[in-house]
Structures are given as C-alpha cells and as structure tokens.
Image (cartoon, rainbow, N blue to C red; front, side, top):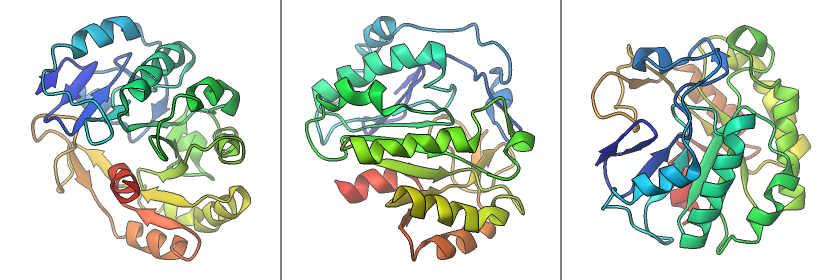
Length: 254
C-alpha cells in the first residue's frame, strides 16, 4: 500500500495518481473538503511528473504491463487543468511505454491534437481510456461552477473520430432529481458523437452507505447510490453500453 496524497493504492491492482492536491473547480457535491483539500480556489500544492515517478519506485507492489497495475489519474485533483496537463501527459507517456492500462476523468476539454503523440505509444486497444465527466447539463453552473461548460467538455468526443482512443461519457455523480432531468439531452449527445460507452456513477460522500471509495483507506467516504441511477441506465441502454464503474469498462474490454 502507498498513500502520499499524490499517490494512493490499496493493492497492486490500481494506482491513483495526482499531480496536485486540490481542485480548481467548485463542484457542490465535491468530497475534497472532507479530506481537507481545497476546491474552487487556486491550488498551490503541485508535484512534477519526475518527482511522482521517483515516489512510485517506493511502491514495490507496482506491476508493469497489460495485466499489471491500472493507472487512474485524479481523485484529489483535475488532471487536465492548465498546470496539471503537462505533467499528466508526461506520466501517461511513461505508463503507456510500460504497457499498463491508463484512465483519466476530466471536466475539461481534451483536444485530440494534444493526444496525437500519445496515441503513437499505445500498444493495444483501449490501453488508454478517457472519461468526460458530467453530472448535469442544464444545471451545470449551479452544481459545477468553475468547470468547463458541458458544451465545451463534449467537444472532447471529437477524439473518437480522429484517434483510436475510447472516450467514455462519465455521468458521475448522479445528483438526485437533477441529473435525471437531462436524460434526453444525454441521449442526444450520445447520438451526435457516436458514443459507445457510458458510466453512470454514484455520489461519493461522508454520508454514503455503500462500499468504501477506492481511493481512501478508511470508512470516511462511501458510495451513495440512489434510485435515479437505475432509471437513467435503462433509458440509455438502447443507445450504448452502460457501466456502473470506470473499471467495469476496462475489465470488459480486457
């Protein structure tokens, strides 16, 4: 196990990486304040890709290769904001060369041009997967202020046309009585961008009653599933593959 904030892993199966602690967005449902990390303010705690890689050497359980440790960027940060993006790209390239599965979720626009060089390092299908996060379309300014607008974020699905990198719609967390109002809007986005895969995810907070969050080593954060999730899943199933967790996509794709 390793837990430095910048790096977190309970076992060799998955390693969470953050190049900053805190997030420049200001999502109302954010769990970071529970962990004493900032949100919605200028993040001042950063670490370079080079220093992160030095620290990973201390994680003796790390396993390189396709069947090895899955690399997940973010959980305590926005990995694609202007300052983090450069370091995130360096780290993505490193782990692609090692052959590991890599995933990252973001509420930012990911320009396919930033991934052209990265795409040349991909060794097998779905080695890198990108999750474009959206908890609400109609009410994003209320619940996800200081993020990129959904319209801007959804431009990231252009990657599907240009590069052989899967881009998944990440409807997480489902906000009670809010996310469900945008079912038709999400269907329209899925059709417009020919999206094959969608993750419908639960809220994570200190009041959750489900299983522990995968990026923490105590019971302080848990999943908090609500009935709206099942209705959204059923509504989207005729149009795409639907999963409950980001790892479900990787495990199914192999």
